[in-house]
Figure (tube, helix red, strand yellow):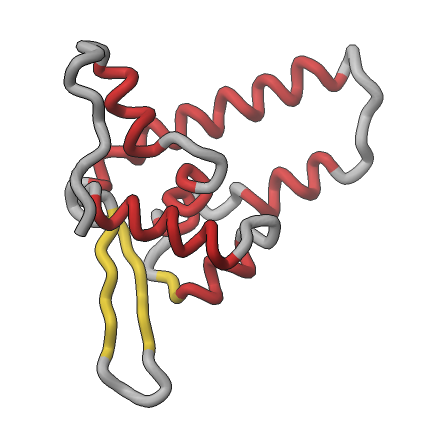
Length: 130
């Protein structure tokens, strides 16, 4: 298990939070896990642009930081499931706020930028389960 990664010298709680949930894939992983337990391949399909290596690294970091729990079942073939830890549940309001802000941002720029016809479909597919 790796040590926790926050920088206590910075003195900034925002920096600590970002050290735990920051990165391109961690917020998406967490968002999908709030819907319930997921196996690795379910997460991989839900986040298709993340490589398996990067997804594995991000999952390990979230586990080491106590935000998710990894359940490995001794069977053939091996089965591993991930879920939000009780401590990680406290991130729900933060991630929901990020989703609301992102939706507001997309709505505000639609009038000034070229519209992408699949934007609403992508948004509803990616973030509709919570």
